Length: 181
Length: 266
Image (cartoon, rainbow over all chains, first blue to last red; front, side):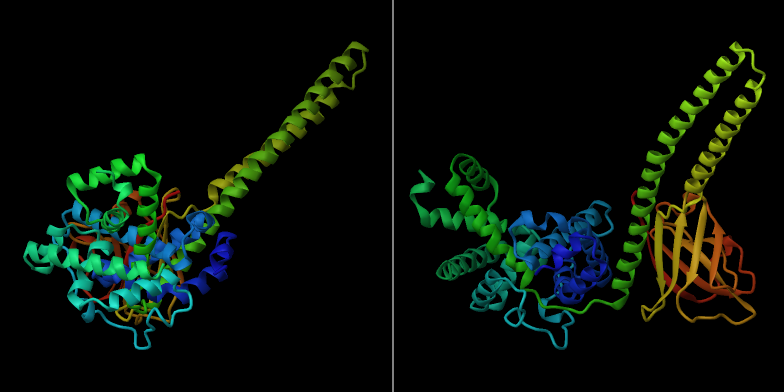
C-alpha cells in the first residue's frame, strides 16, 4: 500500500483514503482492547494523528502496512489503559465478550481483506482450529498484554485452567504456523 | 543446556516470550540467551512478527463519523501551526539580513557625513537625516512584522461539541496567548429568540463552570484564562434563558452539545 508513503509527504487526501480503508479494522482492534466506545474513538483519533506524523518511519519497520498501524493502535490503547489505571479511574479491566461486540453488518473476514498480510491469513487459519475459549486466552494475552493471573481474574477462571489452555493453544498454534513457513 | 542445540525448545520459548506469556526467571534466562546468541534473537523477532498479525484479525467495527471530523480538525490546526512556524522562520531569516544591510548603509551614511564635514560641506545634515529616516522606517517595518506574528492565533486547545446523535455542531478553539475562546457553529442549529447557548467547562471534579454565553452569530469570541480550560477534560453547551445563568447555578437547561477538549502540544 503506497498510501502510507503518500501520507508521509503530507498528503491529506491519502490520509482520508487510508482512514476509509482501515478505520473499521483498527477501531475493531481498539474496541477489543479497551472495551469502551469512547476510549476506542479517542485512541483511533490519536493513532491516525500518529500515523500522520510518523508515516515517514514506516519503511524502517519492515512490517506489512496494516500490522504496522495495528501495532500503533495497540500500543496507544495499552498506554491509555495504563494511564487510566494510574489515575485510579478504572481499577478493573472490563473484558467484553468478543461475540458481544457490535459487528459490522458487512464485516469482511481477514480472508476477504486485500490488505491483510500473509501472516494474518496464516494466523487466522490457525486460530480457527482452536476452540473459542482457547482462542480468547491467547488473543487476550497478546492484545491486552495480560499475565496468566490477570487473565484468570478477568475471565473468572482458575489460574490452573488458564495455564493449561495457554500451554495447549500455544503449542497448537506454534505447530500450525510452523507448517506455513 | 544449550538452547541453540534444541530448535524445538527454542521455537517454543521464542513463541511464548514474544506472546508475552513467559515470566519470571524463564523470561530473564531467555533474554540473557538472546543477548548472547543471534539465532535466539532471530527466533524471537520471527515470532514477534507472527503475533503482530493479531491486530489484523480482529472483527471490524465501523467507527462513528465524528471521529474523522475530529481528526480533520486537528490536522487543520496542525497544518496551520506548521505554516505559522515556517512564516516565523522566514521572518527571522529575512528581517535580520535586511536590517544588517540597512545598518551598513546607515554606517556608510555616517561615514559620508564625517567625510562631508571634513571637506566642509553643509550637506551632512541632510545625509544623516536620510539614513535615520530609513532606519526608523525599517524599525517600524520590523515592529509591524513582530506584531503580526504576535497577533496570529496560536490554537492550543480544540473541542468538537456534538449532539446526542454525534453530529458535530460546534467547533471550539482556545488561544491561550490571546486568552480567546472561539466558538463556531458548524450545524444549522438555531436557538429560539428567548434562549441563549451557554458554554461550560466540565472539570474532572466539581461542578461545571460557565465560560460564557454565546451570541446568535455563526462565530463568537469569548475571553477566558488558560486556567479556566487547563486540565478540563470536556466542554458542554446548554440551552438557557436569554442571557444565560450565573456560573454558580450550573446549567439549568438541557445539555445540547458536548465533547472532549484536546490540548495540542506545541
